Image (cartoon, rainbow, N blue to C red):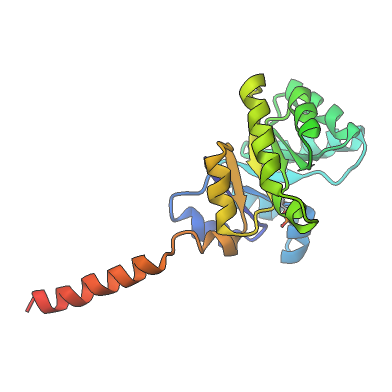
Length: 213
Ligand code: E4P
């Protein structure tokens, strides 16, 4: 499973890229607004660090998405154009596939949306798990259903588990065979840790202090 970071913070991307585990970044307008930095330089800086950077169009009509997406794609070969799951978005996905521009479909909340986006030509679909959990549904069930359909239909579209809230989500996504998981920085920094690792290392080091004398 590929690991992406869900952020618009370049420093956070650089920090985790240095671990050698980062395959990409997903941004969205809310994450960009939170950082308060200019969009294009942010995307370009991230493109220097990882091979996949999702940049979301803000137009809601096909012509507008087409124009924005073509512009983003011209910035850097690592840009993936992020398109919302709407009827206009489907038209844009179809157009971008024809133009060899890579796409990620955002705001996917049902199996039928996933199927439509894949058939329209999306390279990636992003089902949002945490937001389903937030309204009392079991977000991970959606991933299980989508992966079951993918096993029958053999789409070449990668399933990216988005809206991750905690480390358990990451492990569950991997167990279900999802292709990508996008992880917020605070969750990412929890992944390397385990209390028994800390206790074990402390003991090794204290034993070594005695042994080396
Ligand atoms: C993915 O591409 C989205 O940006 C993201 O995962 C949304 O997560 P949220 O529900 O925490 O805003």
